[in-house]
Length: 409
Image (cartoon, rainbow, N blue to C red; front, top):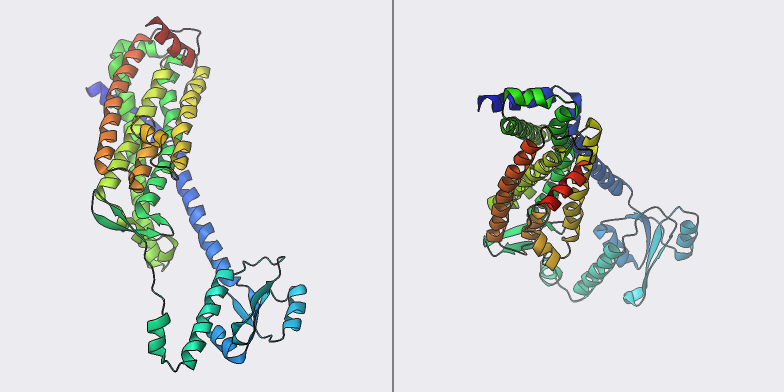
Protein backbone atom coordinates (compact mmCIF):
# COMPACT_ATOMS: atom_id res chain seq x y z
CA UNK A 1 0.00 0.00 0.00
CA UNK A 2 2.89 2.35 0.83
CA UNK A 3 4.29 1.93 -2.69
CA UNK A 4 0.89 2.83 -4.22
CA UNK A 5 0.99 6.18 -2.42
CA UNK A 6 4.59 6.76 -3.54
CA UNK A 7 3.58 6.29 -7.19
CA UNK A 8 0.51 8.50 -6.70
CA UNK A 9 2.60 11.22 -5.07
CA UNK A 10 5.13 11.05 -7.90
CA UNK A 11 2.41 11.44 -10.56
CA UNK A 12 0.87 14.38 -8.68
CA UNK A 13 4.11 16.22 -7.84
CA UNK A 14 5.46 15.79 -11.37
CA UNK A 15 2.33 17.13 -13.06
CA UNK A 16 1.68 20.15 -10.82
CA UNK A 17 5.15 21.51 -11.58
CA UNK A 18 4.40 21.67 -15.30
CA UNK A 19 2.98 24.92 -16.80
CA UNK A 20 0.81 22.84 -19.16
CA UNK A 21 -1.15 21.51 -16.17
CA UNK A 22 -2.06 25.02 -15.03
CA UNK A 23 -2.95 26.02 -18.56
CA UNK A 24 -5.29 23.02 -18.57
CA UNK A 25 -6.89 24.35 -15.37
CA UNK A 26 -7.19 28.01 -16.30
CA UNK A 27 -8.07 27.70 -20.00
CA UNK A 28 -11.75 26.88 -19.23
CA UNK A 29 -11.82 29.74 -16.70
CA UNK A 30 -10.43 32.18 -19.26
CA UNK A 31 -13.05 30.99 -21.73
CA UNK A 32 -15.81 31.52 -19.13
CA UNK A 33 -14.48 34.99 -18.24
CA UNK A 34 -14.34 35.88 -21.94
CA UNK A 35 -17.95 34.77 -22.40
CA UNK A 36 -19.09 36.80 -19.39
CA UNK A 37 -17.24 39.92 -20.55
CA UNK A 38 -18.65 39.54 -24.06
CA UNK A 39 -22.20 39.23 -22.71
CA UNK A 40 -21.64 42.25 -20.46
CA UNK A 41 -20.21 44.29 -23.34
CA UNK A 42 -23.09 43.30 -25.64
CA UNK A 43 -25.64 44.30 -23.00
CA UNK A 44 -23.94 47.66 -22.49
CA UNK A 45 -23.74 48.24 -26.23
CA UNK A 46 -27.42 47.47 -26.55
CA UNK A 47 -28.20 50.03 -23.86
CA UNK A 48 -26.10 52.69 -25.58
CA UNK A 49 -27.33 51.96 -29.09
CA UNK A 50 -31.06 52.46 -28.82
CA UNK A 51 -32.69 53.41 -32.15
CA UNK A 52 -33.77 57.00 -32.70
CA UNK A 53 -37.48 57.08 -33.55
CA UNK A 54 -39.72 60.03 -34.38
CA UNK A 55 -43.29 60.04 -33.10
CA UNK A 56 -45.86 61.61 -35.40
CA UNK A 57 -49.10 61.58 -33.44
CA UNK A 58 -51.69 63.89 -31.85
CA UNK A 59 -50.32 66.04 -29.04
CA UNK A 60 -51.73 64.00 -26.14
CA UNK A 61 -50.58 60.70 -27.59
CA UNK A 62 -47.11 62.05 -28.24
CA UNK A 63 -46.74 63.23 -24.65
CA UNK A 64 -47.81 59.86 -23.27
CA UNK A 65 -45.38 58.01 -25.57
CA UNK A 66 -42.55 60.34 -24.59
CA UNK A 67 -43.08 59.30 -20.96
CA UNK A 68 -43.53 55.59 -21.61
CA UNK A 69 -40.64 54.96 -24.04
CA UNK A 70 -38.43 52.06 -22.97
CA UNK A 71 -36.22 50.63 -25.72
CA UNK A 72 -35.83 53.63 -28.04
CA UNK A 73 -34.98 57.33 -28.10
CA UNK A 74 -37.63 59.81 -29.26
CA UNK A 75 -36.48 62.25 -31.97
CA UNK A 76 -37.90 65.80 -32.07
CA UNK A 77 -39.63 65.51 -35.43
CA UNK A 78 -43.40 65.79 -35.80
CA UNK A 79 -43.73 65.91 -39.58
CA UNK A 80 -44.05 62.56 -41.40
CA UNK A 81 -42.52 63.72 -44.71
CA UNK A 82 -39.55 65.24 -42.92
CA UNK A 83 -39.17 62.07 -40.84
CA UNK A 84 -39.06 59.97 -44.02
CA UNK A 85 -36.29 62.18 -45.41
CA UNK A 86 -34.31 61.76 -42.19
CA UNK A 87 -34.86 57.99 -42.31
CA UNK A 88 -33.64 57.92 -45.90
CA UNK A 89 -30.39 59.73 -45.13
CA UNK A 90 -29.80 57.64 -41.99
CA UNK A 91 -30.32 60.38 -39.40
CA UNK A 92 -33.38 58.60 -38.04
CA UNK A 93 -33.85 54.87 -37.58
CA UNK A 94 -37.62 54.94 -37.80
CA UNK A 95 -40.88 56.84 -37.33
CA UNK A 96 -44.07 55.87 -35.49
CA UNK A 97 -47.18 57.34 -37.12
CA UNK A 98 -50.52 57.38 -35.29
CA UNK A 99 -53.57 59.13 -36.72
CA UNK A 100 -56.36 60.77 -34.75
CA UNK A 101 -58.37 58.34 -32.58
CA UNK A 102 -55.85 55.58 -33.43
CA UNK A 103 -57.61 54.74 -36.71
CA UNK A 104 -54.23 54.22 -38.36
CA UNK A 105 -50.93 53.24 -36.75
CA UNK A 106 -47.77 52.22 -38.55
CA UNK A 107 -44.06 52.01 -37.95
CA UNK A 108 -41.74 53.11 -40.75
CA UNK A 109 -38.09 52.15 -40.38
CA UNK A 110 -34.81 51.98 -42.25
CA UNK A 111 -33.93 48.32 -42.82
CA UNK A 112 -30.30 49.34 -43.44
CA UNK A 113 -29.93 50.58 -39.87
CA UNK A 114 -27.56 48.68 -37.58
CA UNK A 115 -29.94 49.20 -34.65
CA UNK A 116 -32.47 46.62 -33.49
CA UNK A 117 -36.03 47.76 -34.17
CA UNK A 118 -38.17 47.56 -30.97
CA UNK A 119 -41.45 46.67 -32.68
CA UNK A 120 -42.85 44.77 -29.68
CA UNK A 121 -42.01 47.64 -27.32
CA UNK A 122 -43.67 50.12 -29.70
CA UNK A 123 -46.77 47.92 -29.94
CA UNK A 124 -46.98 47.79 -26.15
CA UNK A 125 -46.49 51.56 -25.81
CA UNK A 126 -49.14 52.32 -28.44
CA UNK A 127 -51.67 50.09 -26.69
CA UNK A 128 -50.79 51.61 -23.34
CA UNK A 129 -51.19 55.19 -24.64
CA UNK A 130 -54.55 54.32 -26.20
CA UNK A 131 -55.76 52.87 -22.91
CA UNK A 132 -54.53 55.96 -21.04
CA UNK A 133 -56.46 58.33 -23.33
CA UNK A 134 -59.61 56.27 -23.01
CA UNK A 135 -59.24 56.33 -19.23
CA UNK A 136 -58.90 60.14 -19.31
CA UNK A 137 -62.03 60.47 -21.43
CA UNK A 138 -63.95 58.31 -18.96
CA UNK A 139 -62.75 60.45 -16.06
CA UNK A 140 -60.76 57.70 -14.37
CA UNK A 141 -58.07 58.61 -11.86
CA UNK A 142 -54.51 57.30 -12.15
CA UNK A 143 -55.17 54.68 -9.43
CA UNK A 144 -58.33 53.51 -11.17
CA UNK A 145 -56.51 53.29 -14.46
CA UNK A 146 -53.78 51.16 -12.85
CA UNK A 147 -56.42 48.79 -11.49
CA UNK A 148 -57.90 48.34 -14.96
CA UNK A 149 -54.82 48.42 -17.17
CA UNK A 150 -51.83 47.95 -14.86
CA UNK A 151 -49.33 45.23 -15.77
CA UNK A 152 -48.76 42.16 -13.63
CA UNK A 153 -45.29 40.66 -13.90
CA UNK A 154 -45.61 36.97 -14.77
CA UNK A 155 -42.97 34.98 -12.92
CA UNK A 156 -41.84 31.68 -14.41
CA UNK A 157 -41.27 28.79 -12.02
CA UNK A 158 -40.91 25.06 -12.55
CA UNK A 159 -42.28 22.43 -10.19
CA UNK A 160 -40.43 19.25 -9.33
CA UNK A 161 -42.66 16.38 -8.32
CA UNK A 162 -39.83 14.76 -6.36
CA UNK A 163 -38.95 17.79 -4.22
CA UNK A 164 -42.32 19.55 -4.41
CA UNK A 165 -40.53 22.88 -4.53
CA UNK A 166 -40.97 25.68 -7.01
CA UNK A 167 -37.81 26.66 -8.85
CA UNK A 168 -37.41 30.02 -10.59
CA UNK A 169 -36.64 30.29 -14.30
CA UNK A 170 -34.13 32.86 -15.56
CA UNK A 171 -34.41 33.95 -19.19
CA UNK A 172 -36.30 30.76 -20.05
CA UNK A 173 -33.94 28.44 -18.15
CA UNK A 174 -34.29 27.04 -14.65
CA UNK A 175 -31.25 27.25 -12.39
CA UNK A 176 -30.90 23.45 -12.58
CA UNK A 177 -30.78 23.59 -16.39
CA UNK A 178 -28.01 26.17 -16.28
CA UNK A 179 -26.12 24.06 -13.74
CA UNK A 180 -26.46 20.85 -15.77
CA UNK A 181 -25.26 22.56 -18.97
CA UNK A 182 -22.26 24.07 -17.16
CA UNK A 183 -21.43 20.64 -15.67
CA UNK A 184 -21.59 19.00 -19.12
CA UNK A 185 -19.16 21.55 -20.55
CA UNK A 186 -16.82 21.23 -17.53
CA UNK A 187 -16.76 17.42 -17.86
CA UNK A 188 -15.84 17.81 -21.53
CA UNK A 189 -12.81 19.93 -20.60
CA UNK A 190 -11.79 17.55 -17.80
CA UNK A 191 -12.05 14.50 -20.01
CA UNK A 192 -10.13 16.11 -22.85
CA UNK A 193 -7.23 16.74 -20.48
CA UNK A 194 -7.20 13.65 -18.27
CA UNK A 195 -7.64 11.14 -21.08
CA UNK A 196 -4.34 12.42 -22.45
CA UNK A 197 -2.70 12.35 -19.01
CA UNK A 198 -3.88 8.78 -18.33
CA UNK A 199 -2.66 7.55 -21.70
CA UNK A 200 0.73 9.18 -21.20
CA UNK A 201 1.20 7.95 -17.62
CA UNK A 202 0.36 4.34 -18.50
CA UNK A 203 1.84 4.12 -21.98
CA UNK A 204 5.05 6.18 -21.70
CA UNK A 205 6.95 3.86 -19.38
CA UNK A 206 5.99 0.79 -21.37
CA UNK A 207 6.76 2.46 -24.71
CA UNK A 208 10.18 3.49 -23.40
CA UNK A 209 10.80 -0.07 -22.03
CA UNK A 210 11.10 1.19 -18.45
CA UNK A 211 8.21 -0.85 -17.11
CA UNK A 212 10.18 -4.08 -16.77
CA UNK A 213 12.48 -2.58 -14.13
CA UNK A 214 9.55 -0.91 -12.33
CA UNK A 215 7.55 -4.15 -12.13
CA UNK A 216 10.57 -5.95 -10.70
CA UNK A 217 10.40 -3.62 -7.69
CA UNK A 218 6.61 -3.67 -7.17
CA UNK A 219 3.56 -5.62 -8.46
CA UNK A 220 2.01 -4.33 -11.67
CA UNK A 221 -1.39 -3.96 -10.02
CA UNK A 222 0.10 -1.68 -7.32
CA UNK A 223 1.84 0.42 -9.94
CA UNK A 224 -1.41 0.77 -11.89
CA UNK A 225 -3.36 1.65 -8.72
CA UNK A 226 -0.80 4.32 -7.87
CA UNK A 227 -1.10 5.87 -11.30
CA UNK A 228 -4.90 6.03 -11.03
CA UNK A 229 -4.74 7.45 -7.50
CA UNK A 230 -2.29 10.13 -8.68
CA UNK A 231 -4.69 11.14 -11.44
CA UNK A 232 -7.49 11.37 -8.85
CA UNK A 233 -5.26 13.70 -6.82
CA UNK A 234 -4.84 15.92 -9.87
CA UNK A 235 -8.60 16.01 -10.55
CA UNK A 236 -9.33 16.84 -6.90
CA UNK A 237 -6.70 19.59 -6.91
CA UNK A 238 -8.19 21.12 -10.06
CA UNK A 239 -11.72 21.12 -8.61
CA UNK A 240 -10.32 22.64 -5.40
CA UNK A 241 -8.77 25.49 -7.40
CA UNK A 242 -12.11 26.06 -9.18
CA UNK A 243 -13.84 26.31 -5.80
CA UNK A 244 -11.26 28.87 -4.58
CA UNK A 245 -11.52 30.93 -7.79
CA UNK A 246 -15.33 30.90 -7.63
CA UNK A 247 -15.30 32.10 -4.01
CA UNK A 248 -12.75 34.84 -4.73
CA UNK A 249 -14.74 35.94 -7.79
CA UNK A 250 -17.90 36.27 -5.72
CA UNK A 251 -16.17 38.33 -3.02
CA UNK A 252 -14.14 40.40 -5.50
CA UNK A 253 -17.07 41.29 -7.76
CA UNK A 254 -19.13 42.32 -4.74
CA UNK A 255 -16.28 44.54 -3.47
CA UNK A 256 -15.97 46.17 -6.91
CA UNK A 257 -19.73 46.63 -7.22
CA UNK A 258 -19.88 44.38 -10.30
CA UNK A 259 -22.25 41.71 -8.97
CA UNK A 260 -24.31 42.03 -12.17
CA UNK A 261 -21.53 40.31 -14.14
CA UNK A 262 -22.56 36.97 -12.60
CA UNK A 263 -26.06 36.34 -11.29
CA UNK A 264 -25.26 34.31 -8.19
CA UNK A 265 -28.95 34.23 -7.19
CA UNK A 266 -29.50 31.56 -9.85
CA UNK A 267 -27.59 29.07 -7.70
CA UNK A 268 -30.28 29.28 -5.01
CA UNK A 269 -32.71 27.23 -7.08
CA UNK A 270 -30.37 24.22 -7.32
CA UNK A 271 -31.42 21.45 -4.94
CA UNK A 272 -28.85 19.38 -3.07
CA UNK A 273 -30.01 16.20 -4.83
CA UNK A 274 -29.58 17.73 -8.28
CA UNK A 275 -26.12 19.04 -7.39
CA UNK A 276 -25.03 15.73 -5.80
CA UNK A 277 -26.30 13.51 -8.63
CA UNK A 278 -24.70 15.74 -11.28
CA UNK A 279 -21.38 15.88 -9.41
CA UNK A 280 -21.25 12.11 -8.85
CA UNK A 281 -22.05 11.44 -12.50
CA UNK A 282 -19.27 13.87 -13.46
CA UNK A 283 -16.78 12.04 -11.24
CA UNK A 284 -17.84 8.60 -12.48
CA UNK A 285 -17.60 9.74 -16.12
CA UNK A 286 -14.06 11.07 -15.65
CA UNK A 287 -13.02 7.83 -13.92
CA UNK A 288 -14.60 5.65 -16.62
CA UNK A 289 -12.94 7.45 -19.51
CA UNK A 290 -9.60 7.65 -17.70
CA UNK A 291 -9.73 3.89 -17.07
CA UNK A 292 -10.68 3.23 -20.69
CA UNK A 293 -7.74 5.34 -21.88
CA UNK A 294 -5.47 3.48 -19.45
CA UNK A 295 -6.74 0.14 -20.70
CA UNK A 296 -5.96 1.03 -24.31
CA UNK A 297 -2.58 2.46 -23.29
CA UNK A 298 -1.75 -0.94 -21.77
CA UNK A 299 -1.45 -2.29 -25.32
CA UNK A 300 1.08 0.37 -26.35
CA UNK A 301 4.32 -1.01 -27.72
CA UNK A 302 5.90 2.30 -28.70
CA UNK A 303 5.50 5.83 -27.34
CA UNK A 304 4.21 6.90 -30.76
CA UNK A 305 1.13 4.70 -30.23
CA UNK A 306 -0.07 6.64 -27.16
CA UNK A 307 -1.82 9.30 -29.24
CA UNK A 308 -3.74 6.59 -31.11
CA UNK A 309 -5.01 5.16 -27.81
CA UNK A 310 -6.10 8.52 -26.39
CA UNK A 311 -7.64 9.83 -29.63
CA UNK A 312 -9.86 6.73 -29.86
CA UNK A 313 -11.27 7.45 -26.40
CA UNK A 314 -11.60 11.17 -27.15
CA UNK A 315 -13.65 10.39 -30.26
CA UNK A 316 -15.98 8.16 -28.24
CA UNK A 317 -16.30 10.93 -25.63
CA UNK A 318 -17.85 13.32 -28.19
CA UNK A 319 -20.99 11.17 -28.52
CA UNK A 320 -22.56 11.96 -25.11
CA UNK A 321 -21.39 15.56 -25.36
CA UNK A 322 -23.33 16.28 -28.55
CA UNK A 323 -26.30 14.08 -27.61
CA UNK A 324 -26.69 16.08 -24.37
CA UNK A 325 -27.51 19.21 -26.37
CA UNK A 326 -30.00 17.33 -28.53
CA UNK A 327 -31.65 16.07 -25.32
CA UNK A 328 -32.43 19.67 -24.35
CA UNK A 329 -35.37 19.58 -26.79
CA UNK A 330 -36.46 15.98 -26.21
CA UNK A 331 -35.47 14.85 -22.68
CA UNK A 332 -38.10 12.09 -22.77
CA UNK A 333 -37.11 10.74 -26.17
CA UNK A 334 -36.30 7.03 -26.33
CA UNK A 335 -32.61 7.62 -27.06
CA UNK A 336 -32.30 10.20 -24.27
CA UNK A 337 -33.91 7.85 -21.74
CA UNK A 338 -31.73 4.87 -22.73
CA UNK A 339 -28.45 6.81 -22.76
CA UNK A 340 -29.22 8.47 -19.42
CA UNK A 341 -28.64 5.09 -17.72
CA UNK A 342 -25.61 3.89 -19.71
CA UNK A 343 -22.36 4.46 -17.76
CA UNK A 344 -20.37 6.23 -20.48
CA UNK A 345 -23.20 8.59 -21.48
CA UNK A 346 -25.23 9.09 -18.28
CA UNK A 347 -23.22 12.16 -17.21
CA UNK A 348 -24.38 14.05 -20.30
CA UNK A 349 -28.03 12.95 -20.32
CA UNK A 350 -29.31 12.31 -16.80
CA UNK A 351 -28.53 15.83 -15.43
CA UNK A 352 -30.29 17.33 -18.46
CA UNK A 353 -33.38 15.13 -17.90
CA UNK A 354 -33.44 15.98 -14.19
CA UNK A 355 -33.11 19.71 -14.91
CA UNK A 356 -36.13 19.49 -17.23
CA UNK A 357 -38.02 17.46 -14.57
CA UNK A 358 -38.40 14.73 -17.18
CA UNK A 359 -37.42 12.13 -14.58
CA UNK A 360 -37.27 11.76 -10.82
CA UNK A 361 -34.30 12.00 -8.47
CA UNK A 362 -34.75 8.29 -7.74
CA UNK A 363 -33.92 7.48 -11.36
CA UNK A 364 -30.96 9.83 -11.07
CA UNK A 365 -29.60 7.86 -8.10
CA UNK A 366 -30.15 4.60 -10.03
CA UNK A 367 -28.04 6.04 -12.85
CA UNK A 368 -25.32 7.01 -10.35
CA UNK A 369 -25.31 3.49 -8.89
CA UNK A 370 -25.01 1.91 -12.35
CA UNK A 371 -22.14 4.25 -13.24
CA UNK A 372 -20.14 3.46 -10.10
CA UNK A 373 -20.66 -0.28 -10.53
CA UNK A 374 -19.33 0.23 -14.06
CA UNK A 375 -16.31 2.10 -12.62
CA UNK A 376 -15.46 -0.89 -10.40
CA UNK A 377 -15.83 -3.34 -13.30
CA UNK A 378 -13.80 -1.05 -15.57
CA UNK A 379 -11.04 -0.76 -12.97
CA UNK A 380 -10.77 -4.53 -12.55
CA UNK A 381 -10.70 -5.01 -16.31
CA UNK A 382 -8.13 -2.25 -16.83
CA UNK A 383 -5.62 -3.36 -14.20
CA UNK A 384 -5.87 -7.04 -15.24
CA UNK A 385 -5.26 -6.02 -18.84
CA UNK A 386 -2.32 -3.93 -17.63
CA UNK A 387 -0.89 -6.92 -15.74
CA UNK A 388 -1.20 -9.25 -18.73
CA UNK A 389 0.40 -6.81 -21.17
CA UNK A 390 3.38 -5.63 -19.13
CA UNK A 391 5.75 -7.67 -21.28
CA UNK A 392 3.59 -7.79 -24.40
CA UNK A 393 5.03 -5.75 -27.27
CA UNK A 394 2.67 -6.67 -30.08
CA UNK A 395 2.89 -4.77 -33.36
CA UNK A 396 -0.88 -4.25 -33.30
CA UNK A 397 -2.20 -0.77 -32.62
CA UNK A 398 -3.92 -0.36 -29.20
CA UNK A 399 -7.48 -0.38 -30.53
CA UNK A 400 -6.84 -3.39 -32.78
CA UNK A 401 -5.12 -5.19 -29.91
CA UNK A 402 -8.18 -4.65 -27.71
CA UNK A 403 -10.49 -5.97 -30.43
CA UNK A 404 -8.27 -9.02 -30.91
CA UNK A 405 -8.59 -9.88 -27.20
CA UNK A 406 -12.35 -10.03 -27.60
CA UNK A 407 -11.98 -12.35 -30.59
CA UNK A 408 -9.70 -14.68 -28.62
CA UNK A 409 -12.26 -14.86 -25.83
